[in-house]
Image (tube, rainbow, N blue to C red; front, side, top):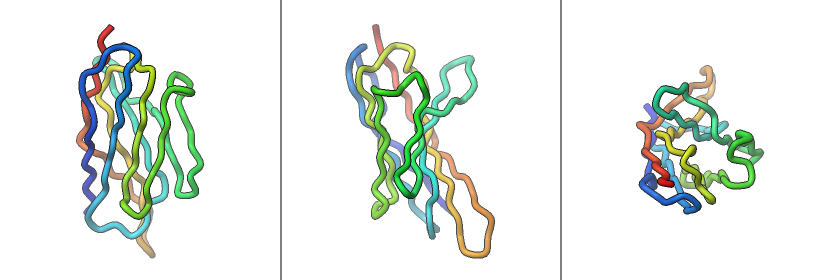
Length: 120
């Protein structure tokens, strides 16, 4: 079983910065893609950014140029540096990983979510 623990959320003023972290622990053999998603009240969960095991990144258009995703494979940890935050970035941010074990199909795991609130 894999456990994801997120940290770094909070309240920040518009234009400010936050850094989210997500550490994976438990029965980990290999992790393919790591990523961040977010869900604002009344909205569906949406992709924010992903990073592959080869460090290829993908960003939602709304965060390009402001957010940077990175990972530390030795620590099974993914980060999201968020700069120039806007009130519309307010949401619960969820960490996600896609991993695998030899001889088994890949699996998905989600964190519990961390609240990010940006005041205007």
